Length: 175
Image (cartoon, rainbow, N blue to C red; front, side, top):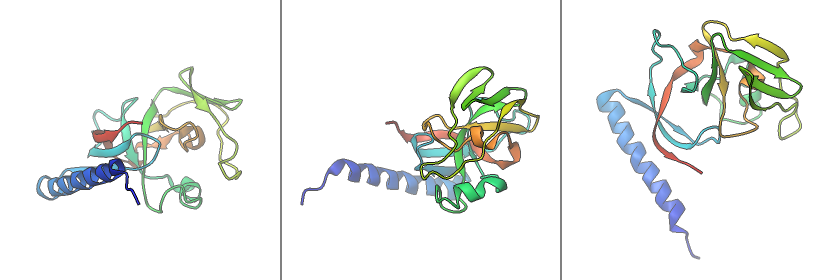
């Protein structure tokens, strides 16, 4: 049996990085997140606290809790293990215009993606219809790496209180 060394090297590199990151957590108090989902590139991200003065900016990558009303979708359908957070970009922030109309999701008039009525298993998805401005204290999460990701096109605006931190890439593996 021949073993391909490339995946093994990648796994060992990730494990080594996780060890180094764990040491930095213990000694320096830094927090990290390992993303293995397709929503954003696979890799290790450093979490920075959300600055209440700066807030979240459009384009920031954030690690966020799954809002309570969407947990039956994310955890009940086994898209993620129970309790795992989501990692998404802030696609829209307070004041931005978000529209979900005729199966199309736009932010400030720019096409973000299409809206599916059902998931891969044919089960119905929640959906927003119409246009609205994102209220203060909220943002709209968007996945940039996966066309059918469960994000703001289904959730709508999400409270900034759901954000665990702003994710900064440390070591990522682009496709």
